[in-house]
Length: 327
Image 1 (tube, helix red, strand yellow):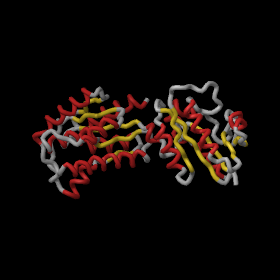
Image 2: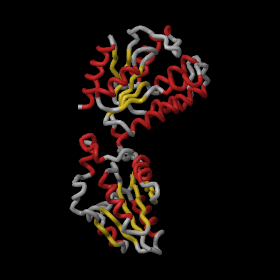
Image 3: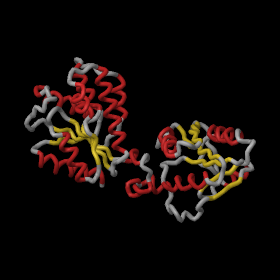
Image 4: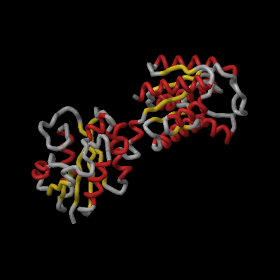
């Protein structure tokens, strides 16, 4: 009974890594994948660990976090600190009762394997199946979109948030932009929720709406083609809470709307007629909410543009602005 190991940063996880893991698991009785990271990593370690674990849920995947205090010179594995090295050694020694194998696509880790008396096995050393370096994918992920697994793509999406007061054309614009850019959009969950449960909302209802909006966004991000259009986001939920509850909003909604990243906000002006669709009831608050949104976006230093005019003008201007950030 032998046991295999794969050590890497997976920054990002790509099809080549999947190929390596899939072939390694066929050559051993058990396989442990160590995702190595530091707190200062450009791509958070928890996210890279999630990529590997969600792709291979049946495997023993471990997140090895090291400090940045002590550098390891000329390390033959992608470890940057002494604490990471110590943790890797502890994991390897915990399998002392089994012959161990170390898999990789090259020979960088061969000397490390030899120092532990571990058999080193290279899979596809000529990189015939995936002839590309991880660094090249990281530098231009959109150019190598097909090499990114579905659960990795959301990290590299261009996210466009459409925000604004009631009846300002957000939903129509999101749908049209998604059609133009051959991708998908996130529908406004608050509308779905109110259609089902009514407009008499409590703070708990707002928690459901905020959570549902994030859930929908994460779900549609898996289907998006390089760009994701979001019909509203949690800054808008925060402002609706202020309207309903005299300026108050739950702390976690503040935390969540500060945590999400969007490449561009399209702030839709209320210069088109207000339409009562049975759910809208704040016609008199449109100008206030528009200015309040502008205030929030400006004070946070977020990238936003104002969209106004008739529907045709809105669509053409929005396409031009999106193209500017996606080239």
